[in-house]
Length: 469
Image 1 (cartoon, rainbow, N blue to C red):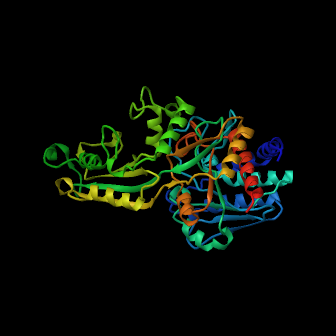
Image 2 (cartoon, one colour; image 1 turned 30 degrees about the vertical axis):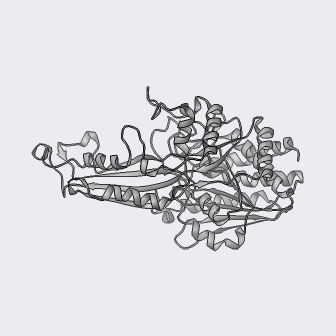
Image 3 (cartoon, one colour; image 1 turned 90 degrees about the vertical axis):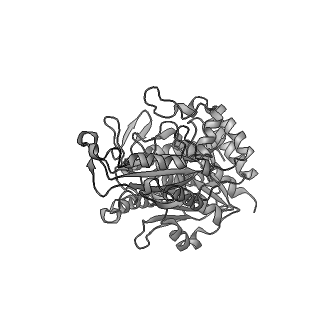
């Protein structure tokens, strides 16, 4: 395989076709069903999957068939199959649904306003994870252009990942025959520690999302008349949160797991490679610093193998400008726990629910409603053939060594696949590098990194195709 020719083909396809398509894709406000209950009536999800389908058809790849599959009441998936010209069977995965808008976008930018600036495409969903379908097809097409053998490839692009992939198990059953038993799974929805080399993810944290409601009154009352007698619902919320998360440290002792020694060694390597980027990759306000003064390697472990809690939404209170001197009847908090890769999410949900709801302060009415707990994933050791291919790809496409790391986010499909196909190998990577800010404002796709990751996946596919059964 001529690595330089593969990269040139990929670069040209990105410039001439993929970037223009991604620009149009960003314009579609196809928010994941958790954030758009009327997604089916609004039609944005259908518009997005049809755009992807139309682009694949235009590519006219030999041996390719595709169809949009829609189960009743569930977000559509795009299923693409490409006949193999060599050994092996691969499943390539991505998603086309998007996170909600969020606020704080810079002037001239917005979630549905595609802008290219300094080689980066700004807007919601390009990097997370709209480019995956385009990158997957391009990686295969590049091999075909060079006459290099590739395995049988099934591409599955779902529309529910940002909501926890609760539609996906139904499609896995429906499409079991087409998916078969893959020997390699390629996922392009992960992070990269920097933009200078190929990063392969070998663990993902789980996720436990839920709504915590604390109610102390049936209606608001005068704060002077009630203060000192009626407990503040916000103070009760703080008190029960403290049962789970240590306010001073952020530690969640009840959800911690034993971290393997190999993972600790990996964290040292990641911290040495990234240096200050371990901390500086975030848009800190003023003089704010990291949650602890731990060494960088310990911060890497806290982010990838430690539990954490984010209060991502609040309800039950007016804006400060409209706040009267009234003791509010309730406070509602939207919570997202990130769970260690090996912790069972259902077990974690029960642990947290009991902590919140049992023996409540002042016998307050407290409820924790959980949404679709998602367990994390830890990959087994990579096979020699895949390790060699990825290391070679990083050198050829980036000019720098391959790096492996855990990722603090969640991709529910990886755990699902790991359980279903225990012998399968995984190449989980992505373009979500420093400041790319997926889920937040000013999200961007670094176009050069997208090209390089695409070309690198060509190397992995070719390696499987030439591997002896």
